[in-house]
Amino acid sequence: MKHLPLNNIFVPSKVPSKKLMIILHGRGDSSDGFTFLPEYLNIDDMNYLLLDAPFEYYGGFSWYDLPPHQLEGIEYSRKVLTGVLDTLFEEQFNAHKSFLFGFSQGALLTFEFGARYEKVLAGYIAVSGYIYDADTLLQEMNQDVKASNWLYTHGTYDEVLPFSTSKEQIEVLQNGGFDIEFKSYQKDHTIAEDELMMLAEWVKSIKT
Image 1 (cartoon, rainbow, N blue to C red):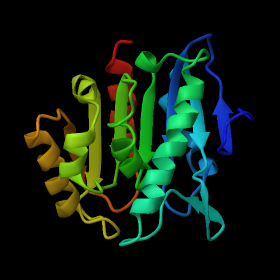
Image 2 (image 1 turned 180 degrees about the horizontal axis):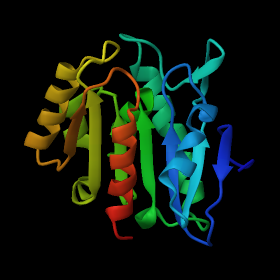
Image 3 (image 1 turned 120 degrees about the vertical axis):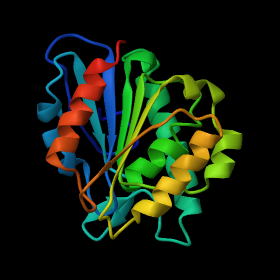
Image 4 (image 1 turned 60 degrees about the vertical axis):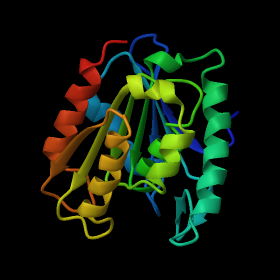
């Protein structure tokens, strides 16, 4: 995907398909950090696009700056992702058959970008992240995405992004009519084996 504004790794589907999973990594990581995911999910008709965030960060990449200076980076990353997905869904892939997956900073962008994006995807997966501003998101989001499939997971032992804070933010969205499936795991700021098994089954259960 050399024509895209972000460095990336593309993993084609095993059978011809317009389904795509866009994967957003966390702070300090890169697309290389999630190369295990396509093989683990093992979905023959799924293409995968693993994106590098736009800002360099200690040998890796970042989607936005550390608090309290994150808003400018979030807004910039939202703009870049809009351009990336617009290009992807112009002809090559089908938005209604595709998924957005994010971990940590990538999870925040799954909400802050994905819920505002004009096209509705088949599913959205956010792992171990948080919401920048849940109330503003409810006001500015594409209301049509509420009818899509949303999954949020978080570790009860997470010392990077506290479980209680993220849970409260998700409840704000849920109370605002945003149908989000929430699952907790006894883990820290990582992705657990049983969680990955659940994610794979969740994606496979969605008919596109």
